[in-house]
Image 1: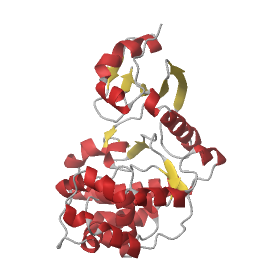
Image 2: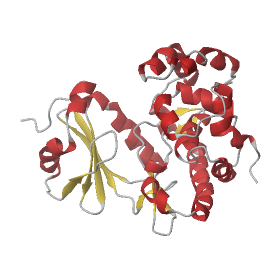
Image 3: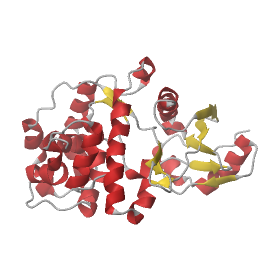
Image 4: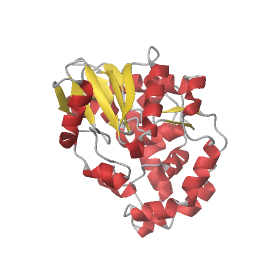
Length: 301
């Protein structure tokens, strides 16, 4: 008898709540000390004090392979959760992993002083640089099979994508010419988190990084694809913090290429970004690139 409901489509999956899945989770684990987390795109549960369970509905089943592989490869290299057990039940995937100590950087951010933030962001830069330097054949299972093909496919549907998210036509009209003018080149392919943001970094009470998590959307591609989330959700338009992050990472960035990848990003939503990011001095994509990533052109001090 099945314990998990059907979730073969995105709509079926979205209709399920973490609370409605709780009886299935306790049956799967054979224990009652399970509490749903409120954050995250997939159902995630605290199991006791030391473990976390993540579920992968059938429609997202392939993401289990991605996340498990990343954790297995990165364990001992980066502070990531340890993959304890994984499997499948009624077409659902599941991954039981160790729980990272501390709280998310997003939760802690408002209480950190300016000096705390300045000290912390170079450490985050080092963390991302270490991830991008990992070279392991096991990561060949990550998508896409060809980065250039992925970029071309994203480019082919970019206007439709941004129109669907509700972006103003003033901005949409600029996108094709902007992308035509940006040379993305043929960059080396590296492991990408794709959502390197405060929400996915854990810190301890002293403000030290204790871990990086949430690897189910990981990919292999150009390193600058990860700087999209850095500019939007770590430095958030603060040029000084971005420069300090890049000092830790050890490189500068091209703001126009970062904006191009932001436009091409799988989860791109500029209507939302404009609500949470500082406005550019004028409504052009070049001005936007400078406002959000421009300070990254300066050499790390």
